[in-house]
Image 1 (cartoon, rainbow, N blue to C red):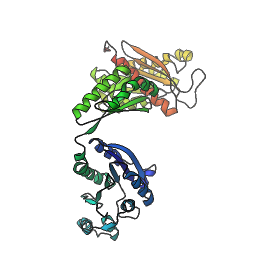
Image 2: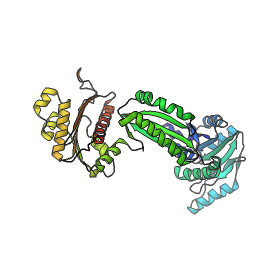
Image 3: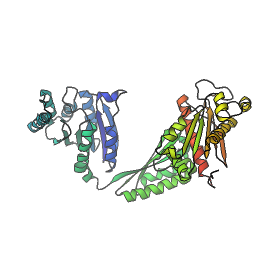
Length: 422
């Protein structure tokens, strides 16, 4: 099966409100093997919504629409559906009475305008809504099953579960969509695709087809693998094999195959090794400390973070030699290394990290343009220092600095022999 989701509401076309219903609907449909092919957001305009209904009906197997079922004039979903399918609206006395009783239980009179919620396209099945006044609708036309659901999530989700269990799941023959995500850092999108493309291209024709989507995000690449199968066991076996092939091809660039973000991967590595970490940041302004401590339980391994933006702070708080700054500049590998050593010594932690760079938009030179960042990771027995040239605006340089620092740390912690405590 394939599906089209329509979210109704002019508020979703502003910067102040986001449609979240479609995410819940997609997750539930995928669980029964139904692919979502289209999503539409439509304002409270009856003609615009009618156009979307006409496009969807006959194109997909399942159409799910949320919102626009309230009692006011801008709640136009019923009218648009009636026009699109050429079905007259009929008032259902039982719905009117149910709404009236709901108001009476709250000690309120039912306004006449609420009768609009009792208008039902001829032949539609009414879906009860115990959590609100707007009933849902179920009907079919031209090979498309249509579910019209209320907008508020607390009303929509129980009705969605009923629709899926009663009308859609029996048609899936037990099939489902099963996913794995590989998270990769230190490689470009084109590099990942050139390495992995020959591996995953044949998967679409396998006994258990696997679709692959490559997504580029700031500081990382994601490979999303989706298998369609009749059982979870068969899908997981196919996905495990696929993930193994990609990991072998990409090597240490893959930092997660189970959905964990990089900061959680780092936290797990530190906890496993009973190690602690302290960080000294200049251009990243405390972002690395923030990301590391976003992980619940990070107090077990995170000791402290020092933001030393000025040269004076580097000298006073981290004991970076003034002559080193004069000779190499504040943005240099020797200074990054000295920052890492200084913060580690001050905290008596297992690991120290130093970041110094030029986040921009000003401050760059010919030798050290904006985006130049030096990063050091230091333990009792090892040190890694590297200079990067990041592209993008200030916030992008800051984020990429922390991503690179954590990846350097991850790679160091993976190396045998294990880093020992001092």
